[in-house]
Image: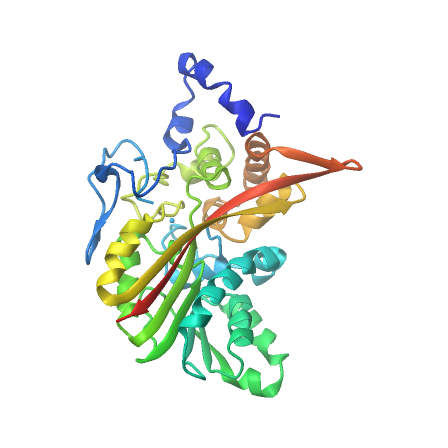
Length: 373
């Protein structure tokens, strides 16, 4: 089994023994800082975002950088990631890793709390999913009115059920509604627009315009706070693209016209990379008193490589699975089996004693907290 370090030893050999075309197309691209990236490799925006010109035959280096790291994410975005099939998000699948997925919510709320000065602020949880982020907000701002929005009926059912079990006053203060992040407009004068792992589901040309549209609904001093997975280049996600493009496999026909890696085609299953911190800052600062950004690289301790598969099945892998023609049902099983096999080459197995082993899933996320002028 080869880990990342072991694979690096093979780089020289690979120069003499080229990888198949489908590997080259989806190879993990090197991450580099938004602040030292060549200008021709970044998005340019203010106030509208455009892609820099690219070679249409090659996936560009980043950092112009978009799994579901979050079913609540796709549920709000009206993404076209799964050609013609409607994604069937599962709150149960998503919450298999509820503690890990909610950790960034706590980190984001901790930065927001000092910025909300008045009692009983008006709060919107955009892409509330199964209500895990809404619960954290309700605990941080007890008694305040919170409206959660999502487009997944299954997620909203779970969110409503969660709050029905809480005490009456708190349950009445929290409501949920179905909506689409691309077009949703909260009532004017909100104090906080909060979003956990949702905006990465919007295609890049729509992402920053949506943020600005939401910012403009805030009262002066209002806060827009969001975080997005920044894992387009992580093995968990680059391996999805690699496996989908393998030739002569039971699932290959499902991806023959999928345009994986072609950032100009919105019908592909892979999401758009996340913009650089500087791109977000330049786009938002004209509307804001301040814009605070940071990037956290979480290291989630999981039981095995199958746990990584289960994690992304609830989010970023879903658009791929939705594409696979069921037929006998074997194609999807084969795809998942091969994806797990590839992950064993990407993620080291760590012995922790007593015959027990663990795998570390590296999961970077970008956080933004913007205060309206």
